[in-house]
Every structure is written in structure tokens, then in C-alpha cells.
Length: 102
Image (cartoon, rainbow, N blue to C red; front, side, top):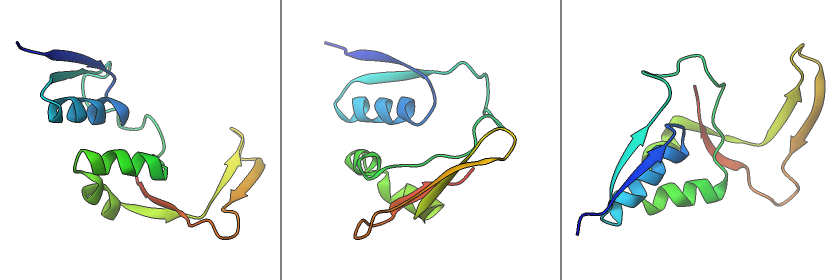
């Protein structure tokens, strides 16, 4: 029996889902709205520890880590640049693992 799946969306979840399905023996095809790379759409990608764990499961976590920088906090701003808030790691909590840079 041939098993196949369509995955809609080429963001981080789409290709990772397709790779996981392929590891499970399911032929997966990713469909994306952009006809090519979406250069300029989006500003960055943060991966929480469970996201890196998911990438480790499909064997690509070690490929992603060198492309990023650990995050120790986030500053939120509105569209005019007004500072809305800042969030850091609580004491004893390690930084969020490396994030991919755009």
C-alpha cells in the first residue's frame, strides 16, 4: 500500500512535518503559496526547546543550531518603534536555544 500526504505551508512546520512523515514511510509533498522564496516576509524565527527537540527527532537539529544565537530576552515594539515591553529569562532558566537568523 502506498501512503502519501499533502502538507500545506512552507514555513518551519511544513517541511519539518513532511520530513517526519517521510521518516515514518509516508510520501509527503509540501505546497506553499509563494512561488519562490518569500524574501522580506517575516523577520526571524525563534525555536523553543521543544521545537529543537522535534528537529532532533528528524535528524536536523544539529544542522540548525550553528545558524542561530541563543536568546536571553525579547523586546516588543509597536509599528512606530515604541517599546511595549521586555521579557527575559527567569533566574535559573537557561536561554532559549539558538534561533535562525534571517
